[in-house]
Image (cartoon, rainbow, N blue to C red):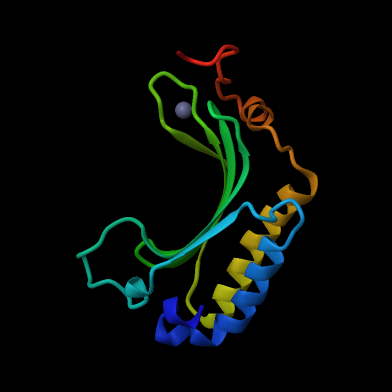
Length: 157
Ligand SMILES: [Zn+2]
């Protein structure tokens, strides 16, 4: 964990590790969680050289992978360009035109100190733990709730 954190934020490492463990050891997340680490992005990007979304680390928990449809939980720390924690529930998209994915629930917080980072990561993890506890675990239920088009009844050929 420390390898991917900016030097100013290394103090948050142990708390973040504990939160990450709570998430990936949840029974609904067991063997469904993948972490990616990008230590080469630990230092703040040069001004204006990188726009958008530069990941330090991310986790993906695949709750449903139905071949034609999916439901995933994601949690990441990224430069956007300020340091932010992003948590989301993502489902496959069945709109025309295709957006690929929709974030049907999300939480984003920018941070300015190690304690901010721990608080934001804890809030993101809590949101995802709430979904792991109670679902729904069907992507279609999330889409119905948020007014998005559902998957076709028959798989596309
Ligand atoms: Zn869409």
